[in-house]
Length: 301
Length: 307
Image 1 (cartoon, each protein chain N blue to C red):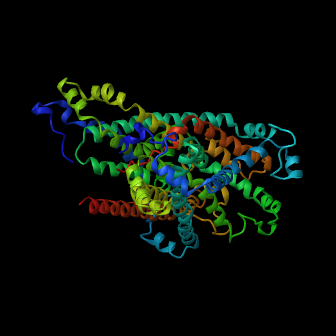
Image 2 (cartoon, chains in turn red, brown):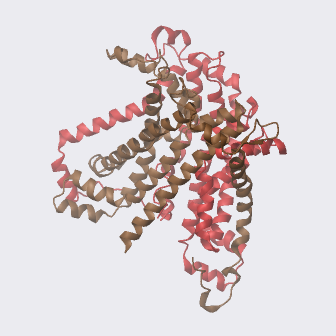
Image 3 (cartoon, rainbow over the protein chains, first blue to last red):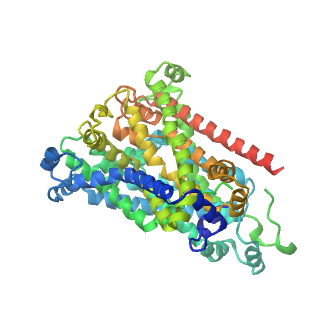
């Protein structure tokens, strides 16, 4: 059940009370083996995180220091010049603002649209709900290139090309495809007694949605918003096609489009990568529990 | 699906008429997804530069693709990428999740397990375009990876990682394993937390080794999640774009071409919208076929097990 994502009590093994199995295992894996595995895992995590560390130490290193001592030495003295140079070259503050506005709008609009769809499919159980769900999931499955050119043509035609609104509309629909599926499977498990009580009270559909369903769906709606926000933040293809002037760039587009430009030296490229990574690390720290549980887990049951 | 029964025979306005709530979603879905997709299919049968009127050419675009080295290479490369994005991350993610769940969190506490899980997951929260820039920086000829190899006395292994046509695809694949690993890991870890613990205890009592338990009990129990992961990552592989765009632009030669990059070139650089649409249509049909086959397979398996 998808509900388990939002409401599950993580069944983390208790470490205080040794179970039979624990004793068996610790007999099999004694001290030395256990620490061997731990050291192996630490080595693997170090490898996983090393690209970020390498980028970080080189982002704050002067170009002459990099040329003289290579990419692996610690910086001789810290400098913010690389980051400032990149920041000013692409108006990174503007890119952060664009990404934030687009992602926040999409998170709110896509969750609202998903909620309406899921209400009809999960609680209303309109005829053919299963087929409609499959149909909505199409938007999630289709590669961007299957729709990009006609959308590009349409956007130019209606004057939305190179506007944030065009990207917001497209991602609202694309993210609501998964959102509909996710919320509908949560709503299908909605307590029947509450729905029956609402009927007896003569409650209308809009009241049922706003006063009864939404308050009980809080955690699932929050999880969906977090994911929709981050997925939209991380998108590249459509923002690159539709947002062509510097002032409209999102963060990934701003970072990627300056690669290979002559004005950028190696140190500034490292600085651009670090600036692209930092907001995501912030999101990760803020939403770690939600993210590391994985929204897809068990949602197919 | 059966319509919900009215509570005790009382007619209520809550029994039907919910389709109104579907209207905004359906209308937007038609405009943004369905109509553009149908237009792409139609355009794939034309020669069109995006400006003048499109000219009907029948199946010519498709016929030409068979001998188009860029098209052939982009599909071959996609099959190689399946190894890096589906096969290796799923198996490695499964092993790591089992190790973290049934060993590390028991032996060293659940906080230690969470720390590892977060460490492996971190690349997944990055925009893949930014992850590409990070790796592009590390993989340049005088970059960090070659410095590490030289420092370790393995200078002979130093390479032009992205510039050598024999190696560039493997470099992209390595980056993708790094990027993807966290996705299966967290899903399998969550699945393990939900797993029925008594089955594991029974297996242990029966004298099954940790390895036997993993293969016969754990993998069997979290089959639905393995299925979701394989499906999602397979679809993602056919959509690969940003990492290739940032790291190699498909090069050197055709070494790292992928279908979405090839459609992008046809649409926006070569003004061959018809050819690009044909490639996009083929990729989409492949992705849809994969999804249908997977879901059918899973549904049949569930039926077989339920009966």
